[in-house]
Length: 231
Image (cartoon, rainbow, N blue to C red):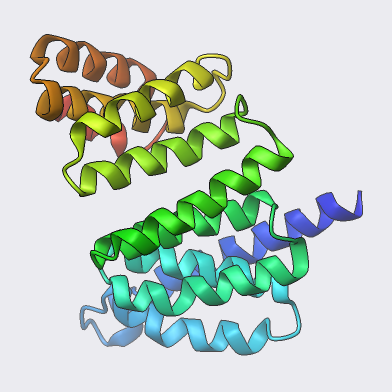
C-alpha cells in the first residue's frame, strides 16, 4: 500500500510539473509575447528542483520528464544534463533493477543516440536489458519495450538488417500482452521501416504499417496520425 501511495504521489508531482510548463508557456502570462516550451522549462525546472530537494524519487521523476521534453525538442545536450541525475537518484532510492530505472536508461540511450554516441547508447540499453531480464524475464512486456528501444537505436545507425529480428522478437512478446499498445505500435512501425530499407520488402512494410494504424486506433496519441500518413 505504501509503495502504491508513493507511486501515486510521484505521478501527481510529474503531472503538476507538466501542467506548470504548459501554464508558463501561455503568452498571456508574458504580455502577449510568445513564450516557448524551452523557455518555460528553463524557468520552471529550477523551482521544482528546490521544491523536491528532499524528495529524491519525485525529483528523479521530474528530471526524467524534463529530459523527455528536451529530447522532444531535439536538445540532446540539455537532456543529458537531466537524465543521468534522474538515473542516479532512482538507483539510490529504488535499486538498479526497478522499472523506473529501466525507463530512464531507455530515455538516456535515446538522448545519447541523438548526440551520435552510439556505443554509450548501446551500453545504456544493455544495462536496461540486464535489469529487466533479472527481475522479469525475457518474455515480459518490459523486456519487449527495451527491445523496441534497441531496434530504434539500430535504425538510427542505419543498421536495418540487424533491427529486423529485434523488432520481430519484441512483437512476438507483445502479442501476449495486448494492453501494451504503444509499444506494439512502435515495434510495428520500426519493423516496417527496417523491412523497407533493410530488405526492400515493400509489401510487407505496407502490411505492417496498416497493422500499426489498426493498433494506434486503440491508443490515443500522435503516432496514429503519423502512421496514417505513412500508409
